[in-house]
Image 1 (cartoon, rainbow, N blue to C red):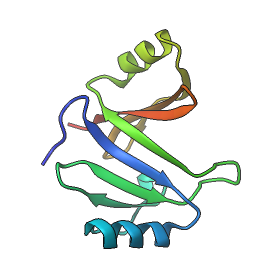
Image 2 (cartoon, rainbow, N blue to C red):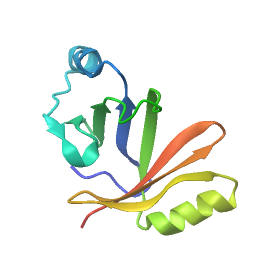
Image 3 (tube, rainbow, N blue to C red):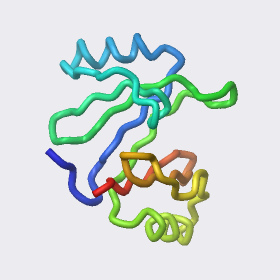
Length: 121
């Protein structure tokens, strides 16, 4: 099942203890995680009811802190990024391609990190 525009497409969980987080979500909700996906920072990914994805990964560098980042599905991440910036968001990662997955960008607003995701057709 595919998520719709402006729905949550991907929930990214960054934690130093990936295995414990996988175990928690597997036990609590019955989610089944696939092996690591290199394009998503070696995240273990599960498809959850409703068609959204959850990825759990370790920090990619020493300065990356644990975070839960929600990516909203958008038809055009560049336009959505500009709109977020217009209302006061700080762009953290400009729109970039993820081979086989689409385009993403991230921004910070109100002290919270958010993401935008255009799914590859």
